[in-house]
Image (tube, rainbow, N blue to C red):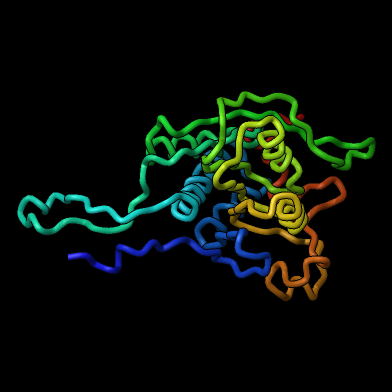
Length: 271
């Protein structure tokens, strides 16, 4: 007999209240926030940095897969079905026949994209899972301020038409790099994905405003939204309540309090 407890999908919601709309999910639960605080501490180095980042993106993968992939109700035998033939699990599962493309945005996104690619291969039919690679860098002026982003190179394995396009990258500062990646797919004629998902450890108000101004339908998943330079009135309210008074970037477009330049920290390369 069907049990209604398991036949209706339960989708993850934003754990942290905010006023940025339905396409931002802030998974600010105690366990990931504790690990993220350790990750950002100046005394945390490799290999601990890599281990913590892996745990955090494992957590985010579970949220993204449960929130963004299609589901259906299936009837699946259990080990007890042989003894009780009329009984089996009947409930929500994720169908394996849905295409996913994961994008590695080098260099900070190497670890997170490989992790997502591996997990999607475990969960879905690997024939429908692909990993693309993009090299995107910030463009800065003479003073070191970020003025934009540029795609320096790409290895794209084919169309993204109808696929879930997932871009995991540790820090969402301005949103320029990931928007440039998405624009590259659209301009170059690779098709239109059914859904676009950006995944980060930390984002900023500037990032959310920029991404949703350019691509309103992008789904953003993050652990924290940092806004250190916001007004006192804005900080007293859920993020997004007074968006014009919120800021999380310093003069060089780094997130504050943030976690530093994770591309450098993850790769032990300080250039």
